[in-house]
Picture (cartoon, helix red, strand yellow):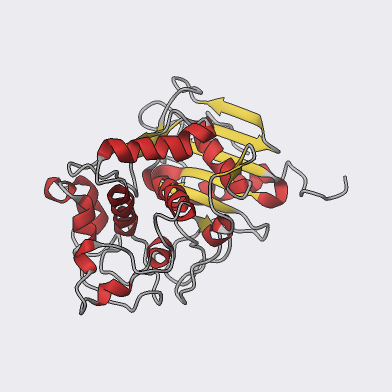
Length: 322
């Protein structure tokens, strides 16, 4: 395997800035590029979607949100609005049928406008929800940061539409119990956290979140996520054009036609993934969590997707005889 510092990008730093491996609950490998270390925060990009999955799971466990009831989006409540059939499950699976997938709209694309255009970021959730339904909910998969943002709005509303209350909920119910105190959320001007793209945390705290999922949503004997939530998370969303997406997490396997390639293999791996090769992979068969954070000036997605498997080969399958 190539060394961490082999590929130097145009900024004079290797692409991979942090690489960390947890085996059976213990850090067995941890290395950083020059200028980075255990206290450095790294941006999530789309790994924020997996944090949103966790916060949603907490709210479902507490009875504040329901997975299979119509999502309580105010703009969809008119009796004749077909969007009223969209459930939280549809949004998490990215099978809502809304015309807000990342490439929608032409030009810069919906996601770019949502995250970086001033008018859209005034209220990103309203922008994400104010689109037409173009497929029956549950029938068509499309990668959608806007779906994550709508879920973020539901979490925000359930916390009194108050930024401080939302942040306090996230820390009290998820970050502090995990010891993930470096986790930092970003918010739009309406006070809603950017649920699909902008969170920051240290490599160790990204590993903590991964370990929560590796242990079925239980941390130090305390159930954080409801029973069955992790299985739901890592089950392929039931749409004919989806092969490797679960519920705001990815699963190893063969992509459907038109989906970009992901992690291959048959050991039941599932993972968080973000732009520039941000990756947290959970490999239950080997009791592993693998974290890779950095950039992608030289390394590419083929490299990132193959990396966990190459690392995993150094560890036995759980329960296998030596």
